[in-house]
Amino acid sequence: MVQNIASNPQSIKPEPSRRFSVAPMMDWTDRHCRYFLRQLSTNALLYTEMVTTGALIHGDNSHRFLRYDEAEHPIALQLGGSTPADLATCARMAQEHGYDEVNLNVGCPSDRVQNNMIGACLMGHPALVADCVKAMRDAVSIPVTIKHRIGINGRDSYAELCDFVGQVEAAGCRSFTVHARIAILEGLSPKENRDIPPLRYDVAAQLKKDFPQLEIILNGGIKTLEECQTHLQTFDGVMLGREAYHNPYVLAQVDSLLFGSQTPVVSRSEALARMRPYIAAHLADGGNMHHITRHMLGLGTGFPGARKFRQMLSVDIHKHPQPLALLDQAGELLEGR
Image 1 (cartoon, rainbow, N blue to C red):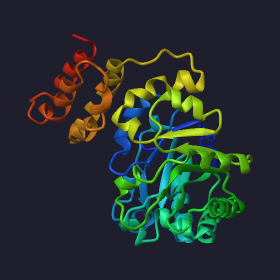
Image 2: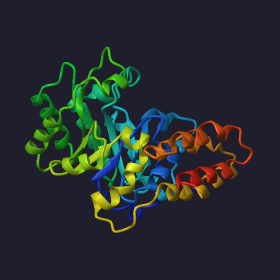
Image 3: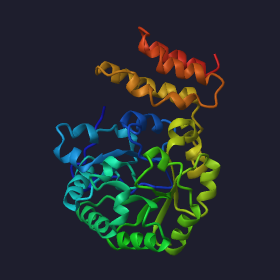
C-alpha cells in the first residue's frame, strides 16, 4: 500500500468538494472499503472510521489508523475526542499524513464514547466543541469540519441547535454535516438511534436558511441519487451512510449525475476487475482476501446473481485454493456468463 505523507504545507491537497460524501462508519469504512468505493466514484469524498485521539496519541500502532492508499483522495480523517490540545495534535497528524480534511465527531450516541466525552453528548457542551474546533483550526491549514445531530434528548430545541452552530461557527468552522435526527443518549442503542428518532429534514433546511453563509451537508436516511439531487436544491451537499455500504453500486453514477462528469459509468464487473491488483498485492503481503471482499458483497445488490455472488466472496472464499481465481469467477457472474 502507498501511504501518502505530506512533508510540507505546499503538498497539501486542494480543499475537497463535499457535494457528495460517504459517511464514516465504524468497522466498515476502513482503507480497503474506501479503496473499493473509489473504483466507483472519483469525486465522492470518503471518510475514515472514527479514530479517537487516545488511539492516535497513545496507541502502540497509531500508524495503522492513518494508513491509506494514494488513490483514496479526496479523503477525510474523522476524530473522536473532547480535549482541545489532543485534537490539535491529531489534526496535525492528519495534515502531515496528507489528509484533505479533518472532521470532529459530535454525532455518535454509543454509551462507550459518551463515557469518554466523545460524540453526540458534546452537543450539550457547545463552548467546549468551539474550543476544540478553534484548537484544530489553529493547528492546521486543511479544512476542519464537524458532523453532528440536530439535538440530543434534553437539548433538542431549534434555539439550542442554533446556539450550538453559532458558537462553533464563531470558532471558525464553516462546514457542518447534519444528521437530521436527534440522538437519545439513554435507552437506545446506536442502531436504534439511526432508526427510531424521526428524520427532520425540515430542521436541517431551516438551519441552512438561517445560516446561509455556512456549508450545510445533509445526512440521514438518504437512499437514492434521485433523493440526493432533490436535497441538493436545498443543501450544499449530501452524505450517504449505510446505503452506500450495502448497495455500493449506487456510487457508480455519482460522478455523472452529481458532478457532471462525462466519464463512462463503470460496470459492476469492471469495478471488480479494478480491485484485482489491489487484492493480489494484499495477498502477497500476507493479508487475507476476506479483509477486502467483505466490503464488496453489496456490489451484486439488485443484480440477478446477487446471492451467488455474496456466497462466493463470503463463504466459498475461505475454502477455495485459488482465491484470485474465485474472484475472476465472481466477475464472470457479474458479466452474466
